[in-house]
Image 1 (cartoon, rainbow, N blue to C red):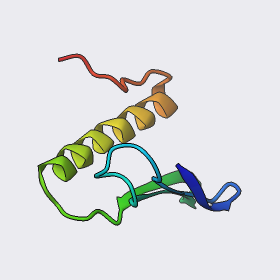
Image 2 (cartoon, rainbow, N blue to C red):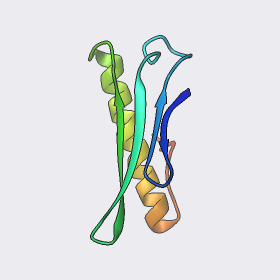
Image 3 (tube, rainbow, N blue to C red):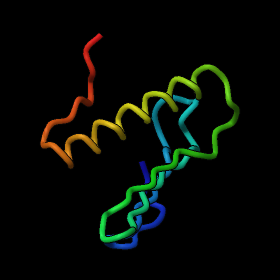
Image 4 (cartoon, helix red, strand yellow):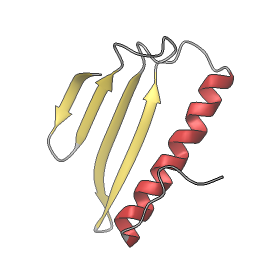
Length: 84
């Protein structure tokens, strides 16, 4: 990954420069904001070449990771690698 943009306590943006060829050139952003006194994390993985089955798999997997991160922050326990 290459750091594209960093705004401390607000935003991190990376670009994939090496690895699976379907990820190379894609970008990831983690945006933090506050809403009603609570932190909100917005995640995006974009600039895909297409929306094939691999894209769908990654989209679903990211959703699982984000739910695990939410659980970890709220309860102290996450499941980044769910069983099953």
